[in-house]
Length: 502
Image 1 (cartoon, rainbow, N blue to C red):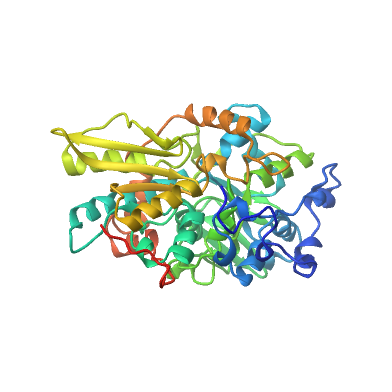
Image 2 (image 1 turned 90 degrees about the horizontal axis):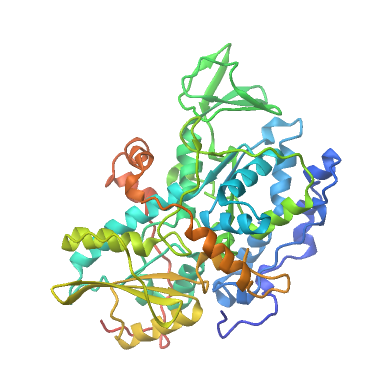
């Protein structure tokens, strides 16, 4: 998966200088402070190669390169260690959100079931000092549901005068950045405006979750307490920070005052299969409620987390993954209906078939065309193809797609576009050998594990419907539009732009 700019040489914009490392490098790891046998301080700095993603060359500015270099395990440990210091004004509520495509990697890596892998990962993170561990599936629910509605709207509005199709997915940050920085307006106009699962998860954690917490100010210390709680003693202690999953309105007790937990008091880490997610974390455009705070403060790849786990020697007790809803826990691992992704294509195809043509589609049948990473799905009615969807994975297929768009010979209504050949499971942050090549045997194992995870359709989630009403003030409200959708920045391409004819 290489473009014309790619070599095995490291991208100078994505590496860090010794001076840039000084702040995080000096922070001792939990293993160092506690005398553990693990050697966290020997963690290798994450390096991003041009061939790892589409976000290369002009796609990354020097400033972004510096910010990317700061997203590493040392930054994670810096916050963990600050939470152990006496100065509680610098303490953070540590939240980790795990992408579903990362779990098969941990299951294969440690030779356990995906449920055991989830519980072991959660238990390990909490043993380090993480307060909450979520999965991002609920965020993907929102992304898919909003994409479904947008496709139906685009399909109905599409005409010779208003070219709204094909709709191209926007969940892959490498692809989106490439479209914005290289392809320009002729392509970005067709990107789905629904935010990616990572972006939605950022809003859920820094907005909804933060609003559900109450921060009690007591001098320089703070406690996080449940909304309207009177059971002040039944709270879980963590160092000098007390946490409970519910909270909210201002209240007083014994001369203290309480307020919603500020987003700046939360340090949100994403565990993801690819390096491009680090780049996505730099994007702004979050709701006003998150002003001054990014949705994701740090992104660590599955491989980086696995390295921490392997080098640590902590006593770990398995733990169930948390939810955004009080003391409820995730009792089992679920996924969306995608072979190696969040399954936007399959879910949007079923929804469109029902909404537009009153057809119930249970099994979505993929047909590989020129290679296994370019597949199509069609719906026929009365002998005519009425829906034609495609999945285009990897740079080679993306380039072919763009060439056909340019020539006006692209027959698809919808395309699920992913930068990594093989999809999200094959992200370079987890599915590669020590020498930097794709680990095909590991990928096949992960694909089998992922395929065995039960599928849950986003429409079936009662919690999502509850959040639409409680958090977003309705399914089609202005707030839902503000929080769940985005706009794209694109460089206008001159003579080299695409002259697309539909």
